[in-house]
Amino acid sequence: MKIPLSPPPLKDLIQEASADTLPQLAQLRLGSLAHGQYLHWDDLRHRTPPTGLNHKIWWLALSLARSVSAHTLPFHDKQGKSFIYTLPEPLLKNLHEIDRSAGLVPGGEDNSALRSDQARYLFSSLIEEAITSSQLEGASTTRRVAEAMLREGRKPSSLSERMIFNNFEAMRRIREICGEALTPERVIELQRVLTQDTLEYPDDCGRLRIRDDIEVVAPNDERLVLHRPPHHGELPQRLQTLCDFANTSDSDDTFIHPIVRAILLHFTVGYDHPFADGNGRTGRALFYWYMAKQGYWLIEYLSISRILRKAPAQYARAYLLTETDSGDTTYFLLHQTEVILNGLSALHIYLQHKQQEQALLQSKLRTLQTREKQLNHRQAALIAHALKRPDEYFTIESHQRSHQVAYATARADLLALADQGLLVETSHGGRKKIFYPAENLRDLLGNAVSHQA
View 1 (cartoon, rainbow, N blue to C red):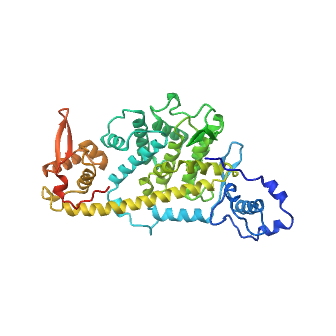
View 2: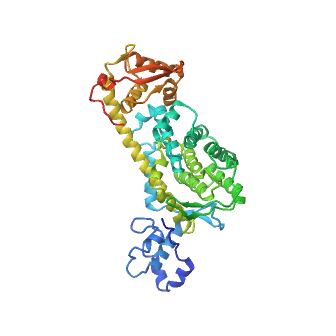
View 3: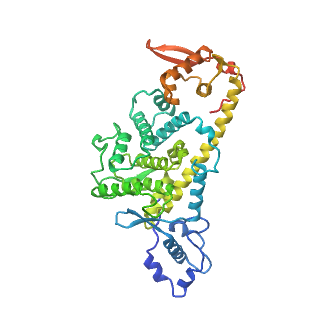
């Protein structure tokens, strides 16, 4: 990837504009948009400008229009200049769509199916985010091995597994503290949970960065340095500013949309790089924390990292567009809201598919009785998983963790399925019970059961 070309200095653009041109700029009605997009100079210079203007004057018109509606943030770049953001129409539209789709505002899609089975879906989403967030940082274990580790609650046996385990524990911790104020100590503690036993220098776990040799390189070219973060001596104050921003209520400050505020927390951790390692994971964790704090309950089920992993260069470019255009974070806000919308779209498709799959499976299970009762939703979910992965096994502990139920409840579920012949019970080491899908499970349920996830 290439670093975007910075715009010409504003003073040079004004000097180039003639006395006759300047009054015309206000009448161009360009607003903060160009061709329906929030264009950076690096993109705009390749577009055809309006009739009678060259690229520099066109950029000057856009810059002046943006400056009129810009909001100043309490964060500063390395030169001490304040970051800003604007609210162009594409961003407003994205924020509105997220409000409608994320379970906060009445009138969005009916998410009752998800609410009725939150424990299972939430556990699965925490696993997904833990795995993909760690893979963004270099974890290489297979998804199946990582998922089995988390469901069974076993200790990690490799560096990659430890990274995933740490991410999972951090996501669980976020749910516990979403109602509390953010403090520098809490941010540092999150980084400690995320990086425990994974760093080349263990002393960097659970403390602010004490060196200035950190370089952020391109995802596909380690020789290309994209960012050098601020001096480590500034970090305590910068982290306090971040916490103050997170804790500010609307009554104390000019209103900032909650999604904008959550994304800016993510952005600031990435820019400041307060830690020697784990900054990306910590920034994403703070995003989830703030969204949960503000009541966007459906966001808890998204795997933001899964979307970012598909296009890491676009994520890095969103930072670069901000840095090379006078600290305008609108570029990053637009990118992240698109990521959230993509995640929500995928989640709604997944939910629709799961509802259809569950309905089909339930139709096959109606005749299978356990103590004269139909199989409950936990047992039905386990059978659906067994059909998809017939070589996988289940334990009472993994079933308990997947559905967040008591040990006795999980045990009763599995024993009942074994009594029906749907699972085969064995013992491991003489004590731990392991349950495998029956070899003729699909025949028992009929051939019409879906093979899909």
